[in-house]
Length: 93
Image (cartoon, rainbow, N blue to C red; front, side, top):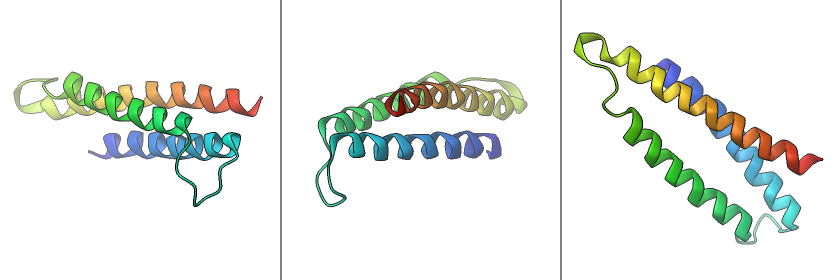
């Protein structure tokens, strides 16, 4: 569970940073609704979470399934962090 939480913590951090950068890029105030770029990101993240859950839900077997399942969640989160970070880096350029 700790490795899943650690991976999700990094994922949530870069996700929130990307939302802030997209909102800034769109020039919207804090009280304004999300611009389409943020709405698209939120939809994409929901789909990604569903796909990750589907992919990792039944990973591993036997009494030690938790290690393999946690590794699946953590690996997928790390991949998503790199993807979102790359997109965030592209905004700053």
